[in-house]
Amino acid sequence: MSWRLVLADDDATLRRLLRLLLERDGRFEVVGEAADGREALTALTETDPDLLLLDLAMPNMDGLEVLAELDGTDRPVVVVLTGFAEDDLCRQVLSLGARACLQKGNDFASLTERLAAAVAA
Image 1 (tube, rainbow, N blue to C red):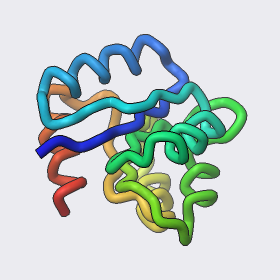
Image 2 (image 1 turned 45 degrees about the horizontal axis):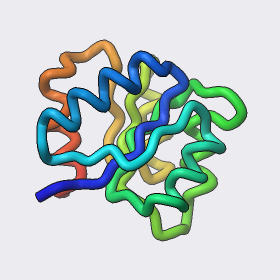
Image 3 (image 1 turned 180 degrees about the horizontal axis):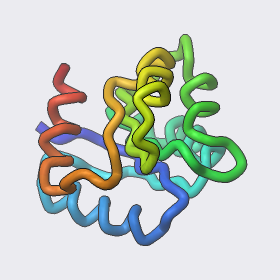
């Protein structure tokens, strides 16, 4: 099984590393990248992915605004990958429809398994 994925993070270096990690896994195909929330929404429209890996702190439109914009639409599974470790923030993104809220500081080796579990759930 292969899942089509859009990466949305304003850190270009992190996007490159995530792309390498995900594509090396073999279960993910990165079909789009975005450096801000507006680009993420455009990439979703253009690529129709199964999964959106979404940062919260981005310019132009942050991840919370992206989640709110997607509310009530036919959308991909959204997994938030954030540097913020606040439980209240994770509860908020889950209430906005994200399937999971993962911390950037955690072990990236387990990221692909956690994403696969989120998509399969």
